[in-house]
Length: 251
Image 1 (cartoon, one colour):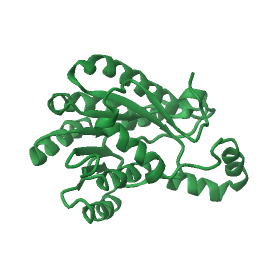
Image 2 (cartoon, rainbow, N blue to C red):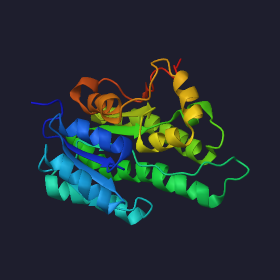
Image 3 (cartoon, one colour):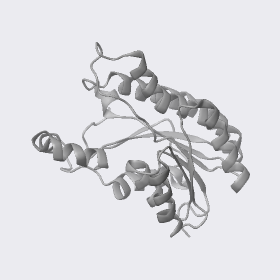
Image 4 (cartoon, rainbow, N blue to C red):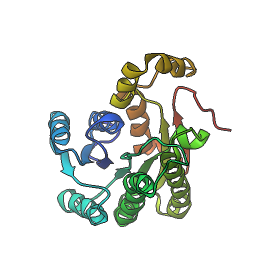
């Protein structure tokens, strides 16, 4: 029996990157995972990979910027599986621009793929998370915690998600639901492309990570997500867990 045996998990942005690492880690612990993504080809490929371990897992195509899709995601999962145990709000897209360059369109993209789906999926999932005494895992970023340049839209949305998560932790603790955040540094496909494009800058950033490397999406980030989705974490809520090799040490 795995730590997440037969738990029903929704992961947005689960077809690639950190989301896929979390999905793989969770199915190996017995979870039934629904990955939600806009990219159908990547989603179908990941679905096959997950089903080789967890046959009931599935891919659902959805545009998270279409608000009508959000409740449908929740209702589809409940109709198929009967419950929801874990909601992982991982998806987020944004453009890197300075504050002076950032447009309303840039803000809409970042909040529309990150904050708003997180909020509305949590809201729609609440009745079912109450029944399961479930878990919510949201995502923070060092861009928001440290205020990285050219990350205005992304950092603002990530800090909004942190604020929402703390409120939810206070409101939902009485229902046995815990709500936590992961702030990762991971060797995702995006980071790999950046390393090839700017190898000197990549090595400079890596040298400032106390552990000396970018985390693995499955074995480093995914395993922490497994912990936060399991009964082992039930007395932890409202916390930002820095899974970044020691890059940011919260006080």
